[in-house]
Every structure is written in structure tokens, then in C-alpha cells.
Image 1 (cartoon, rainbow, N blue to C red):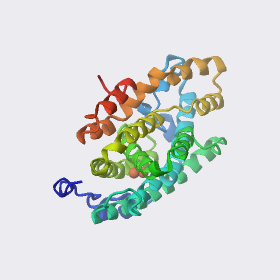
Image 2: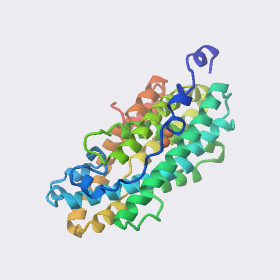
Image 3: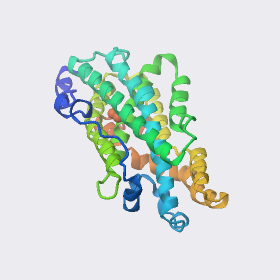
Image 4: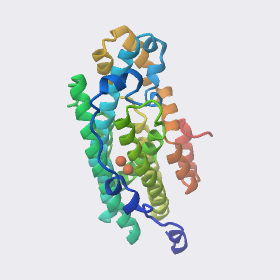
Length: 317
Ligand SMILES: [Fe+2]
Ligand SMILES: [Fe+2]
């Protein structure tokens, strides 16, 4: 990293003391007393999060079934978030705070990493608080299994060469933080149960700051990485982006079954989502910020990196 390019970055979470949810927002994550009435007109989760709800076979099942599927998915998403924040994102942030990457960490970058770590701890708290209440309301009892994405990310780190492990953690943080901010953008006030909306909205506002920060740190890290390490780093980034586009088919079958959907319908709706082409399309759509940031910092200039991502269907040739 040259002194001049380092100076282009601020490496801060802008106005964190005034704007971070954990510093400035009152806690209001209790389900309302009139939940039954709210559920007549309000949704648990933005339909944009759940494209399978638009399938004609699901549309034909009526509102109560669709709401149960959305509640299942919200609880799964919140449980996933709690694990992601603690075991994945904050693990990635530790590599910056404790200097595990072979590069200098400017003071503002380190301070912002510590602030971000605090934010994620709060996100885990409010995600867990709401998940427990919704799970209780519906009697959702399959929350013990670790979501597939988390299992696959941990397995990916385990099979990474020891000298690459800190970099793998940082890249997982970068991909996760640039993808979650985009996912949360799908939230609109219009149709959501208000306490869910407020929780997702607070998360989104924090994540927009986190995404900008991780993009800057990615640029700094990529420039600092020796050219000889870049091909292996490119392999890692591709594998991580692909994990974040996975659908947990086993869990989805369980969710559909709990809503009383028969096995033939489940297979018809779920199996197309698991096909490689659907997977690549999701990866490309989820990772637009991630891929744009990589492009901005010259990631696709080496022929190896470019071809790798073209072959995977993530960028055009
Ligand atoms: Fe978060
Ligand atoms: Fe975050």
C-alpha cells in the first residue's frame, strides 16, 4: 500500500457515536400484544427475501401458509444472523484488530473495527431476542441445526492452508458485509410487522456503514497482498461468494413440511432453486457490491482472476 493511496481512505464508521444502533436507538424488540390483528394485514418478512413465495403452487395455498413459511424463514434468518455476527463476521474483524494480516493497520481502521465488532454483538442480541419470541409463537422447534452457510464457511476455513487462514477470514468478512447490506436493502416499511421492520431497519443502517468500511479495507488489503499470493486469494474469494449464494435445501424442505405442504409440491418448488445455474445467478445478483468493489481495486486485471470468475458465471467474459 502506498502512502498516497492509503490517504484516500478514511477507514471510519462515520459518526458512529451518534448513529450506531447500539449507541443511539431505544430497544423495542418485543412482539406486540395485538399480533393476531397485525398479522391480518402485515407480513413477517419482505417478499423480496423469499422469491419462492411467488411460485404459483405456493400462491395457491393461501395467506396462512405463506405467513407460516415467512415466519419460519425469519426465525432461520435471525438465528443465522446471530451465528454469523459472532462466529463469522466478528472472527473476521479480529484479524484486523489484532494484526493477523501481514500488513500495517492504520489507527482509524483498528478503531472502526472495534466499533464494528460492538455493532455486530448488538445485532446478534436483537436477532436472538426476536427469533426466540417468533419461534415460541409458532412452536418452531428445529432451531438446533447450524445453518448450511455457516457450516460451509467454517469448513472452508478448516481446509484452507494455515498461512492463508487470516486472509480467508478477512475475505469472508468482506463478502458477508457487502452482501448483507444489499440483502437488507429489500426492506420496506409498507407491509412489515412494525417491530420486525424496526429491527431490520436498524440493522440495515449499521450495515450500510460496515459495507463502505469493508470495501475500503478490501482495497487496502488487496494492494498490500504480494502478487504471488493473489491467485490463491482469488480462489478463496470465489469459493466464499459461492457459499453465500447457497440455499439450505434440507432446511427449506423442513420449513415447507411444517407448513403442511406435501412432498411433491415441496420438490417442485425447491429443487429448481438448488440447480447450479440458479446458484450462479443468485451469486451474481447478491454480490453486485462485492464484485464492483473487487473491480474498482483491480482484482480482475490479472488474466487468471478474470477467467476464474468468467468460468464461474459471475462476470461477463
Ligand atoms: Fe450486522
Ligand atoms: Fe456488519
